[in-house]
Every structure is written in structure tokens, then in C-alpha cells.
Length: 144
View 1: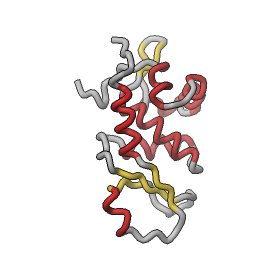
View 2: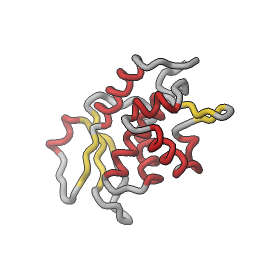
View 3: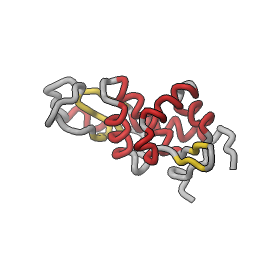
């Protein structure tokens, strides 16, 4: 089974890997319950997460801190994490959401000097964050 999408991590393990308290994870999951299928699976009374789901939540958290709504942040993170990003990948997004200002996109470090920034942009090191989560996930006890 694909380790990137296999939902084998509990809510507590997900909170540790996301770097947030479990209560905060619960609140964020509740706020996005209509789209929770994008980042979690419910089996019985428990929620399960994959490495991809954990990365989506962590990147969405960064985008929300930069001013996105939680729903927009989850959508942008999910769209850009269909596959594990390269370690040097960056997510670049407009700092202010306005109609027609564009969606976030991933670039590599080597592309940054060639970009012309004409407005405020946020840069999230999506590759580094995901790479760190993948490495830490190997050391977390997984309940089968």
C-alpha cells in the first residue's frame, strides 16, 4: 500500500506530527467537517490520517496563518499535495486573497531568482515541511 496515502495514524499521532495540540486539531477538523474526506477517514468512532493528510493539515495551517480561510487553505494544500513534493519545493501564494489574484503554486528553490514579485507573496517551504513529517512519521508508533 502507498505509504503517502495509507491512513494508519491516529488523531493523537496526527496532532504530534502536525505540531499542534490535539484540541486544536479537533477544532480544525470540526470546522472543516464538510470537506474532512480530503484529510481524514472515520472508521467507527475514530479518525485516521495518512502522511499526506498530515501534510495537508500542516500546510493548511501555514496558509491560514497567512490570512486564508480554513476552507481555502485546505483546498490549496490538498490540490498541491497529490504526490509528495520534492524537498526543495516552495508554495508561493498571494498574501491577500482577492478575486482574480491567483491560486497558490509550487516552485523549486532554483526558480526563485527568476520570479518577478510585483505584489506581496507568502512562501511556504512545502517540500521541507513534508519531508520532515515523513521522517518523523517513521518514528511514531502506528496502531494497525
